[in-house]
Structure formats: structure tokens, C-alpha cells
Length: 157
Image (cartoon, rainbow, N blue to C red; front, side, top):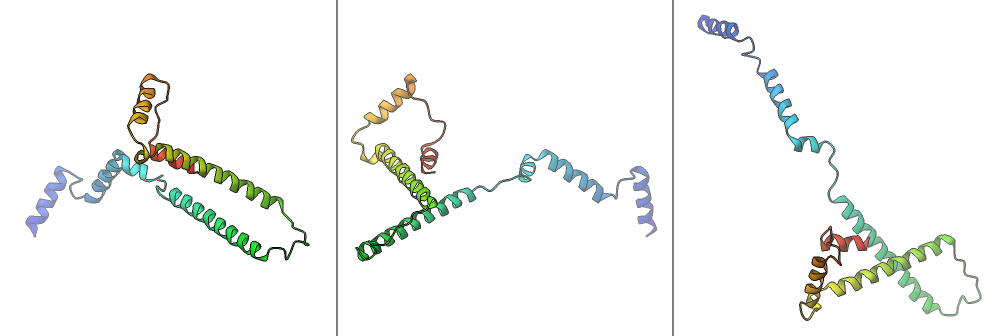
């Protein structure tokens, strides 16, 4: 017991911070956090995938609306002339919705046409690929800054 106390006193005489484990450990952790860029970036991280999920939800909603419109249209065709003598009211919001739907259909048609042109499985030879490569090399065509998938997802928006 006395020997242990003597060793403790001797160690404290040599270095006063010998038994201050917590403070030294905290200092080491602070230095590690300051030097670690991943931890610094982690403080203001943003979600990676939620925007893709939200886009998928919007697409599903639009598809559901299209199905409902087709269903309503079939019901109107079955009714035929029952309500011809009645007035039909169309609000400005509905007109705006129809216009947006038409624009969306036009975008989808353009995207489908672009995808059909660029579809590798439908091409008979590599002439389109080589023409595209030559145009990029000569400088007539700008080299894309993003991948094909990113460009395709940008069209669907």
C-alpha cells in the first residue's frame, strides 16, 4: 500500500498529467474530429435518395390520374346522350391541368422517341456510334457533361 502511494507520488512529481486520462482523451478526440473531413461533412449532409422517391411518387400520381380520366371517359361514352341537354362547366384550374397534362404527354413522346433512336438493340450496325464519335472528335457535337442515364432522367422531369 505504501509502495503504491510512493509510486503514485513519484509519477505525479515527474508529470502532473499522468492520471488525467479523460482530458487527454477528449483532446485527442477533438483533434481527430477536426482532421476528419467525413465527420465535418456529416454535419450538413443531405438525403441522397429522397428526391428520386418523390419523383417516383409524382409519376405514380400522374399515372393514377390518367387511369381515372380514362375510366371517366369510358363512363361518359356509355352514358352517350343522356346529358346532352345539360351545360358543361370547365374551370380555369381544370383547363390549366389539361394543358399541363398535354405538355407532359409531349415530353414523354419526345423522351420515347429519343430513347428509340438511341436504343442500341434496334440499330443494325455501328455507323450511328461512329458518326457520333466522329462528331465529338471534330468538335461539331459537344461532349456530354453527364452520363446517358442522367440525361435521360433529366428529360423525364
